[in-house]
Amino acid sequence: MTDPTRSRSGRAVPEHRLRRMRASGLKPPIPDHAEGRRQDENAIVDCGWGRLLFAQTFSDPQTLIEAIRAEAVDRRDIAFYVRDPHVLLGLAPQDLFLDPSHTYRLELATYRPSRRTRRGFSVRRLSSAADAEAVNRIYATRNMVPVPPEFFWTRHDNRSLLYLVAEDAVSGEVIGTVTGIDHSHAFGDRERGSSLWCLAVDPQASHPGIGEALVRRLAEQLATRGVAYMDLSVLHDNEHAIALYEKLGFHRVPFFAVKRKNPINERLFVGPERDEGLNPYAKIIVDEARRRGIHVEITDPEGGFFRLTYGGRSIRCRESLSDLTSAVAMSICDDKAVTRRIVSGAGVKVPEQVEAGGGDDLAGFLERHGKVVVKPARGEQGRGVAVGLETMEEIEDAVAAARAISDRVVVESYVEGLDLRLVVIDYRLVAAAIRRPARIVGDGRSTVRTLIEHQSRRRAAATGGESRIPLDQETERAVRSAGYGLDDVPPPETEITVRKAANLHTGGTIHDVTDEVHPELVAAAVKAARAIEIPVVGIDLLVTSPRGPAYVFIEANERPGLANHEPQPTAERFVDLLFPLAIPQAARMASAGFDQRR
Image (cartoon, rainbow, N blue to C red):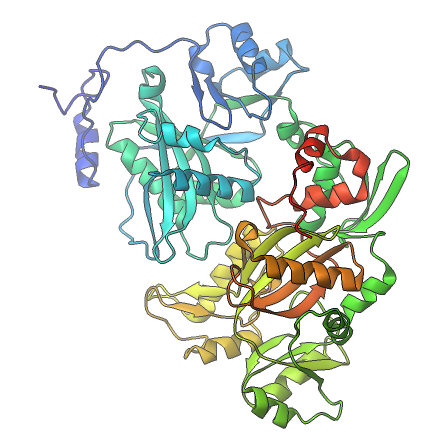
């Protein structure tokens, strides 16, 4: 019979540690594998996205270097716990670089679990192939190396690798993930350590505390095994993550990570480019161009302007707007009334529309439709748009607000439905996504105003500052229509939609539906793009369901954001359009059977 007061290595656990663990509700360590196992030499753990090479088990630096050089294509290997990185770099300066990350440690003997109950989601073990696919989807949104789904599934009950996911209580969707490695099981670690990897939260998730809950659950599960500590590696400039780890009790330790120079890691060892000021919508294109060897000249990072040059061909861009879009097409998209007439003439279904102050009877228009939408005739990013207005007073206030954006204001019939964005490049559908309005979830303690501010900060962090929830008249109206004031405290788990328009720039979220969108909706989007004669466009439809044929056209965006549509290859197809000769050979072969969805 095993002694619960002894660790797996056979050493007695100090009494003071046992008292702390019992007081915090953690179980004492219980041996669950053979005592006396010797620590493996040259220990390597395959994680799917790459391998972890535990440097402390390599006695010979040259052996470690050769192991790092064996990194597979499109994988990311990490040599961790390197005490003397200068030695490795001195022996292989052309192949290796020092990862600009800090190592943090959580002492599990002194860790205190949180007594706070998380609402709206739960944390559990990865348990299905669908979970594995959902984890890869989140990895894609965070630009992380994907893992073959079968790798997850064949190792989901492995004692060395511990996969946890956060699941939304209402939708059942996986909204976060983290991986833990038990070093004792992995390679017989004599220090009884563990490490945390791949913490990632869906940028569209609205619940607070998902990352913290995943880290805590992983720490608590490892602590029950008698693990002494949990380490992690975090980039030195990831301020949000570092703040979370320090809040949980992690502290810096003097260990380093070394990686091989490869295209995945390139930005970490070539130094910063002159594009720090680019927003995510320009940067996703610039990154793809550089990956293909296309020369990039940033002309105005703040405005998102850059020039791409390849093989004697040079094209200027402002994010996804390029020289290939004509001034006529741009002017059509710029005026919502003109856009509506052009696409309607091509047979695309449009809502009824009148112009405010144009002699039309707005009161009669409202009476006929019950609810209306007010928007500037010219404008973008959802500014000045008011949705679902039911009184003349609301319409007049909305028209006055919209006139601050454009001297002409249009009023449209309101149609219930989901906001569907279809990105059409070269008259082919590349991505389709449902855009949902900004929302908050009550916690029983915070006011609506505080919840909005917190959610706005989370959206800004997830989108590089591009998405924020403004505390303006439209937000206040949406909150009021839900039965609350900004200073009210909603009950726990109460969901409140705080914007009527589902625009990303005003805090909305985006959810990929490319693989399930109905052919009629695709046909409508392509038809609208051809009517405008625009090669790159974001077509917005209101639909009852992305799987059904019913829709009504809302507007066309001549500069659609290509970011946030992961895993769809929006930037890749944009660069394909600009520079067909730069298309990789593998992509050319794959495109032979590509569904053009015309």
